[in-house]
Image 1: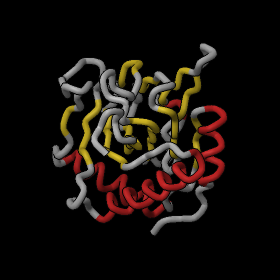
Image 2 (image 1 turned 180 degrees about the vertical axis):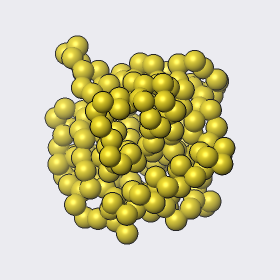
Image 3 (image 1 turned 120 degrees about the vertical axis):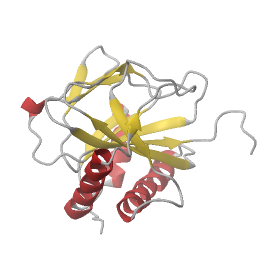
Image 4 (image 1 turned 90 degrees about the horizontal axis):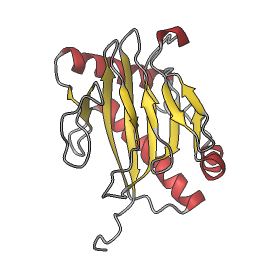
Length: 204
């Protein structure tokens, strides 16, 4: 079951003005817990694989998370609930900002204690499909002293640290903001998602 507390227009306005925002309320607390339970169970069963980087999907010391991609037609009930809700957001952002977003891709990500992800951009060098990055956090009772913030680097040289509290959704423009994941002292769970346009030059 989802919730209607998410403010779609506020999210669109923040993306238009600042290029990023953090919003609560995308999923209900029970739906968020169901995702967290499944993510943990899949990780414990070794169903998450070491993440890879770049268009060539190569192993890299740049990142230390393990992932499981959501596969259309083969999603669990919790994954399907998230996919449907994030697609409502995609449609809302198209309506408000005319971004031309045609699909979303998502995966679970688990960082074990001490693991991180070095500073990077989400848009791949030779592929402009990713337009909006979204990170939905699954960590109940997270304290700032646990670490694990996503550090978002702003254009003025400053940065913002976004802590991975359960139910928070971080949105930012994929081509605009470099970011990194700082190490945590406990397992850090999230869903990483990208809202995509058709790549330039793709057949219509």
